[in-house]
Length: 79
Image (cartoon, rainbow, N blue to C red; front, side):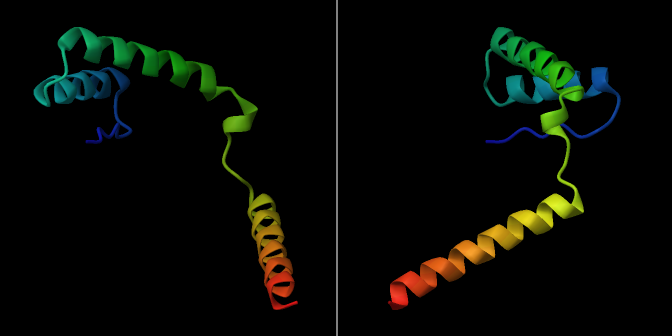
């Protein structure tokens, strides 16, 4: 079961997220604790440089390296 957190007012999202978990059978104390931990992680990761999205250049490099690795693997199998 998954619980999505759409981008709206944070307090509203937190309340709906917790309520959805409780409605699905999660203990209210556990749901509140999970939401509290999610908020802590969100604040910590908001300024973390490693959490930013890939640039077009980084995606191209990743795809290029992957394609080269597959080609090398195919050549090794063929030999």
